[in-house]
Image (cartoon, rainbow, N blue to C red; front, side):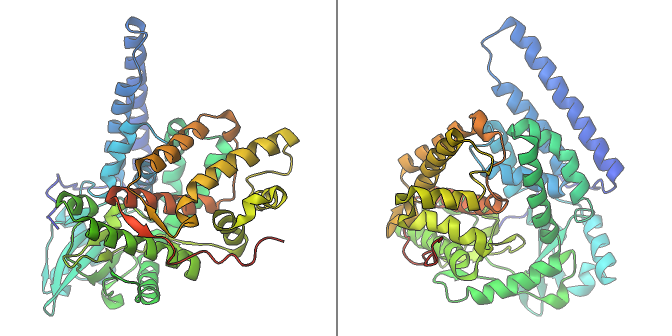
Length: 442
């Protein structure tokens, strides 16, 4: 992995006042962009919003990159939901998956002194003060100890303490970009806040990383780093260094179809084993969390975000994706009610509408599950999937919140997995880990 040579950041706003001021300043910039756009539109009524979206995306990303933390993490998540945002936002926010501006050396040393009472050089035999990767919540440095190459992940100052206040500040931007109803946005933000509070607790991440790497150790072509609790803290994680390439770098090597399929199979097994055997899943499937090792294995290097699936969500949802339940209209509607996709006060006309729309949506989503193999290189499947998503996003009927909160991360996980498999153009055996849905809803 190449060293991060982006412009380093020498300070980071940590107080609510400093962070709030940054959001206000960005809001003024966006307001200026709108004034500029509508002034030009007076003289050119046919002008679209592409330049406005480009300007807004640039200003928002620049601000979030300097703030880091939960606000930048939300941008990263939205960049993966390709049918939610204009392309300009997707392109800009995708940068946070790999390379946000890193923090400078003195801030790194300060973090070590706070949590260990020592500088990095007093802990490791070697420590590279320049980061190799910087993302939304932390950045990674290379180190050595007793001849072992290590990766040291360091959380940005103030990130864990500013989640709630940051999400309140980012809410108006999200409201404008997503066009969700306020109720739906509140559900989204609450679920995101719960996961981010867990994700910024690095002691919890170390425990989960060890648990999940042990639970998944028998999966073919999947490898994990070892973790070092004694060299970790609430804001610092020390693990083995895994050599490898991120997805974009891997694809640039023009790998064979056989190797693409091997990595794709490893990803499918990794996610579906967790969903169906552990009922808890690595819910952050962006490419920055994986490496392809020189011997063609999938290296999983981040377990910060885990989504537990309760039975009252798992059974009705996966029985819809992998059984003949759709053949029974009454039972399907019963499942939709359990999942709050159809609500108690819906009229008969609304019930019929949502039954029809959700049935189409899940039928599309479930295609890989209902066959024993699936070619994720098929453009038509993704055209249909995202085309339907865009169509639904524009419908006024979907401005009202629909679905239990568990959909937010489970959908994100599965669509994120589909997107990576599509980039790999992988052909996958999808019969390896099937849903356990014997207990079909009575």
